[in-house]
Image (cartoon, rainbow over all chains, first blue to last red; front, side, top):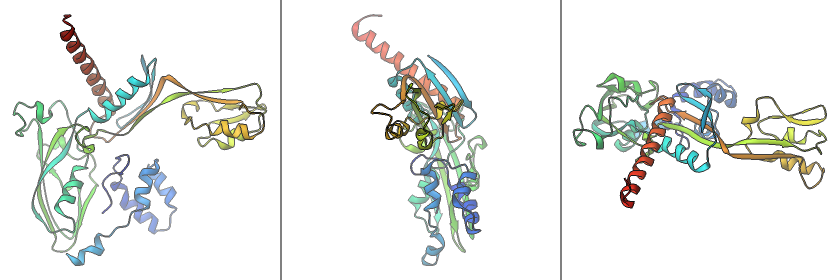
Length: 62
Length: 274
């Protein structure tokens, strides 16, 4: 799961994940999406850029 | 001392504090971060959790959700008339009961008192698949950032010295500093480098322009000089929406005043002066 807040500054970034994921999958430039989402600081930007969702991979092993 | 606001809305403030000192500015910053109380989920009673997250992880994620806080109705547990046992003046309760398959969002957290609802409705908590279930009861208490970062009302909260940029006569308008400035606050006009109008406050005090100027070969002394004015501070305060930024600023200042009054009383008592 995407962390609720940015590790460094504490801004709530998880609300932006869904839109970020969809727009990136549709081939948009991540830098532009992050700008649109209002994530200015590089601490918040790396939270979304470097996230890998593994919930669906874990589910079968419950 | 004077506060000049450049920007003030519910979540963001930018202001200049004049005729101050670093010691006061830093005390003010620390008071805003760690002395202004907010609500955050503190105790979670889990009745059922068959999701992929451990109970502890789930509770941790819940704790990080910012909650709307009305400090006129809620007080820290230590100051409450119930003595910290947990009553409606110091504790807000929530229930969450969701069955998969679907995503659990912060809006699924049902508050007993609607004024303490989560600030964002769309925070994903856990993704549930078929036959997975989460049923829990959560208690939020009022506390300060000193105890745990989840009670901090601020996100980015800091200050810098007011930048003073001066150019000497030697400037030949080569434009090296203009290229180097990461904030783009410099420009060359009529053969001399100068600051773009109203962009002076955006200077980072990084001094890359000074280095670039020296590289230009004018001499050992750069013709552009950056200095931070220690008696003027530019503050940036960003709130997490649990409290309006204005209230954070006011409460931090009230806290500082209270602290200095307490110190004054103690010192007077010790020295026998009334």
